[in-house]
Length: 403
Ligand SMILES: Nc1ncnc2c1ncn2[C@@H]1O[C@H](COP(=O)(O)OP(=O)(O)O)[C@@H](O)[C@H]1O
Ligand SMILES: CC(=O)OP(=O)(O)O
Ligand SMILES: [Mg+2]
Image (tube, rainbow, N blue to C red; front, side, top):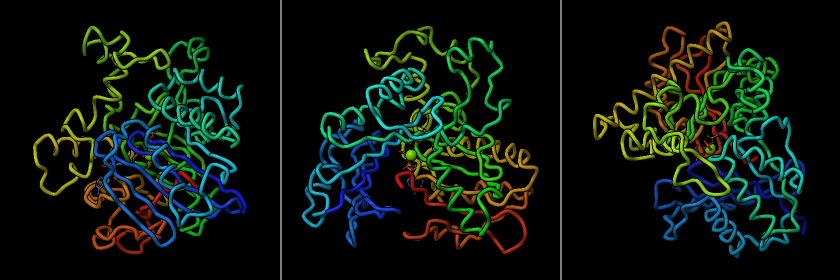
């Protein structure tokens, strides 16, 4: 039996894995995901052949490694999935790693590359640590399977110098790699290709404003098929707020928040050095700080349960509007489409409607029935534009970082 390819996507609140056939193009065989790692109980979504299954998991899966092990076992133990019964049936494991520093392409994991990635962990301790823990786990538990890491940051290598440079001492910036990197690039690359195909345009002539809004949320402006700017920066903290992240704030706020902010956080370990400020802004802010929940489906409701929920929703809409305006101007108004994706973008009709209603001056309008219905299971891109005029299309794209 030919071997399979396993693709692993460790997000901030979820771990998603997909097994593919080892052929070109690869074909998905089984799909499994644990969501709600930061908002227990964890939920399992399992998809194999015609079988689709959702369940609440009783085990404690509060770390990405625990979720990954659980998912692997779930797939290996499925009697109907005889093609992948053990690690012997896996040829390659492809890992999504958020921060790839200056890496422009995917790399195979060996002692040298793992060492270089370890060096990057300090730039993104909260995001790379979990993914690399899964890479390290695979090295031990699946020693004969080759691991390849794909980076969220690689897609944004095309961002021009004036956009990626922070106006600080350039010697220090260069020595320490302090610049805008941008993330969610694996997703933006998939969305750009899928939407260009949907619009029947060559990718290299397609201009888009894309929202990838999930637990971590960002936006990206695509000019001629390439990333021109994105809202995240040196780390995934910059830009839009998220489930537990503040997004961009005045950097001076850190010095006034608490006088302990610069010290190592109690969550810091010998491997993961994080300051109290990083811990607060990354893990104790955003929707969780405002409302107590990290689940945006409890916030994006017609009648919010509290003023704080309404405020969280309004803050999100306000920040996204700011980027839409900026990106529209950066594209000189030559926009083919405004695209919603990620857990919130794909599922919240209310958020899409609220945001697009505020963009009427840009000629954007939504068809309520199409928006309420959202994309079908097998529909990668759905057009929710009102009318068939010449203006930018409003689209929903069900992103697929694993493929
Ligand atoms: N119907 C919905 N309305 C609004 N938000 C939703 C809905 N369904 C899921 N979400 C939110 O989507 C987010 C998860 O998105 P996802 O892109 O899978 O996250 P990540 O990859 O960052 O872990 C969660 O905050 C979840 O609450
Ligand atoms: C880059 C990032 O924030 O990823 P995620 O949304 O999966 O947490
Ligand atoms: Mg994600």
